[in-house]
Every structure is written in structure tokens, then in C-alpha cells.
Amino acid sequence: MSMPDFQLDPRLVRRRAGRAAAGYATVDALAREVSRRMGERLEYIRVEPRRILDLGCGPGADLPTLGERYPGIPRIAIDAAPAMLTQARGEQGLLKRLMRLGKPADPDFVCADAAALPLARGSVSLAWSNLMLNWLHDPLPALKELHRVLEVGGLLMFSTLGPDTLKELRAALPPSQHEHLHRFIDMHDLGDALIGAGFSDPVMDMEMITVTYTRLDDLFRDLRDSGCNNAAEARPRGLTGRSHWQQLRAAYEALRRDGRLPASVEVVYGHAWKAAPKVAEDGRSVIQFQRKPA
Image 1 (spheres, rainbow, N blue to C red):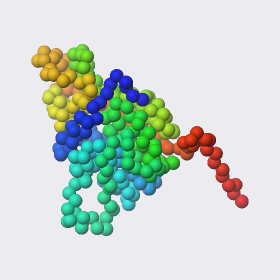
Image 2: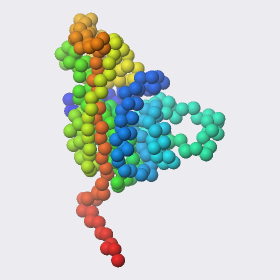
Image 3: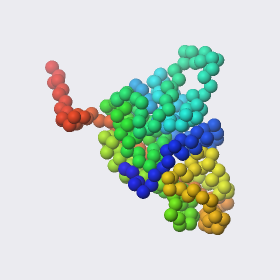
Image 4: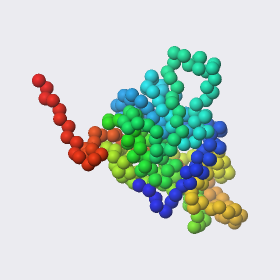
């Protein structure tokens, strides 16, 4: 389910992620909290994976947690930004390799686009994706790829951002023909995209997380340092006038409560399964026969 009048520049997204990679760990508090809440949801789902995919792994902060939860299970970490993978891989010198002897193997690191995964069909049991889908203006191709690489009975577990993210900033912006902020897909439309990609039994829920700031510039700094600057194709290219910023700041200041400025984040959580196919790729129906017990 895409937004036809909204497009992201994927090359700019990758470049900004690359520039943010080295210092990302200092501004990823939201991603860490969302990951923790994803883990809580995973505790209620019975899954015994044979291979795990972390799609959009960033600097790799979720990989140790997945390794501890499923010890000894091979992990594949994929991201579109090479600099993020460099951070995720860490120092690979001889000393580290010697220290790894007898311990679980490091993940396999792969630089790839989410819509063109270099993995075999049915090669993954659990696909984990924390705050990656919101970087795609159309998540359907990536969801189709995730469905392809999952084995039958495999689980997709993900989080993304909903349309009320940064609603205060969106409301404070003066009217413009340009895209000053990213748009995010509604939870229900995302559920439709999961069905369209072939997944079954999708479960979705949403919660609002409010981050507060002393100064509006601190919010802008967090967005910049985490690589979350505007990457819309229709973003303004020229300099923004002084009156624009004065209007924005005045509107946002009106929201100050107890000395803090709020920034809302709508987090959407979801999981879905890859069921056995009912129709083969050539269109023929799939009929399963089961032997009766003797």
C-alpha cells in the first residue's frame, strides 16, 4: 500500500544513514525502547527459528538480544547503508576472532535493498525488522520479499511509524506546497499490504510514545544526528525564510508544558505468518494429502 503523491529519495536516505552511523548509538534511545517492547511481544509467540534475519539492522544493536534469545541460531543482518553495517560488524581483528573461539558465530552481514534480498526462497524462519519499513514510501515490495525468503510457518515481527508521528511539528509548520516532513502509512493500510504480500493472520497494534525536549533545537538535532532529516522527493530545496522559522517556533512554544516540549511518536507493531500456499506459482491449486494413522 503506497502513497502515490509521496515519494522518498532512497539514495539520500542511504547517504544520511551512512553519515549518522558512527554516532547513531548516542541518539537511538527510541529504537532501543521500541526493540524492548517488540521483545516483550515476541515472548508470547511460540517460534523456534532455524535462521534469523534482522532486516534494517542499522548499527546492529538488536543482534545481541536476538542471539541471547535464540542461542546458537544463525543470524543474517541486512542494511542498505554500508556504514551502518561497518558499525554493526565492529572490529574484526585477530584478537577479537581469537576471543570468539568457542562462542556463537557472528552474524552474516549483507548490504542489500529491502526490496531485493539476496537470500534463497524459504531460507529464514524469523524475520525481525525494527523501525525500517517507515523508510519506504511503499512497503509492499519489501513485504513481498520478506514473504519469499521466509519458510512456510515462518514469522515476520516488525515495528514502524504511524501517521501521527511528530504531529506537533506537523501542525506547527506553516502551509506549504513542499513536503517538510515524511508521511507514514496507517496501521490498517499496512495490514492490507501484509495480506497483499501473502502473509496470513496479521496482528497489529499501536501505541503513542511522547518524547519531551527542553528546546526545539534539541529535537531538530536528534532528527539530524539520527539521519532522520527530510528525504522526501518534494522537500524544499531552497533556504527557509526567517518568518517561517519564527512562526514554527511560536506555534510549537504554545505546546510547552511543565517546561518541556512534546514530540509524539506513533509506533505500530505487527507480526504475521507465512502460511502454506493454496495456489502454486503457475496458478494450479495446491492440495495437501495426509496419511491416516494406522
